[in-house]
Length: 215
Ligand code: HEM
Image (tube, rainbow, N blue to C red; front, side):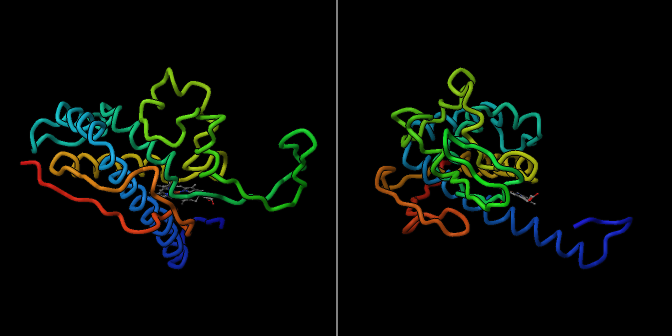
């Protein structure tokens, strides 16, 4: 939709619905997955708790963009969580031209095709034999080098997510607040859970997480 000088009331309404629709379910589901993965991995949860406490030792320390940028382990946890459980599990595109995706296999101009983000994020030939394990350290620069194009939870290119910076920032703020004050545990096991491909990627069954106040 192209806007002229001023937006009409309907255009403003449509834009608000787009941002809420695109940003609410995605961020909410991604945070729920992340908490579940951390509940399954107490050692990783403890390590990120220590990182958070080192940056925000007191309750009244102001959360700023700068201080959030110091939480590199938390950031890698968010990425690993979005790798294993990409909220937007697949996207569709129309080919603007013929292109060969592998020798002898061409997608023809005008075809609609689907990119399976979940599948890409779980491929053992790209991520290694431990692709099904939750390991935030795979996002350390020395391990992640050369893998950028295989990690696309926010899509890539011209129509990628408009809100990905906001998503990372709000996600971090939420995790700081939650992990600082609560400990999460679960009896669910990573190799037993299954996902449902609804509009967003949802857990089959319930997020059975126990919550304990830290102090
Ligand atoms: C974890 C959170 C999020 C994930 C995983 C995510 C993922 C994505 C993906 C994969 C797309 C491309 C969809 C497609 O091409 O069909 C997209 C588009 C979009 N996202 Fe997000 N998103 C998230 C949060 C947000 C937030 C917080 C906002 C707004 C504040 C937002 C706004 C948008 C908009 C407006 C588009 C459409 C862009 C366009 O078509 O040009 N997203 N998002």
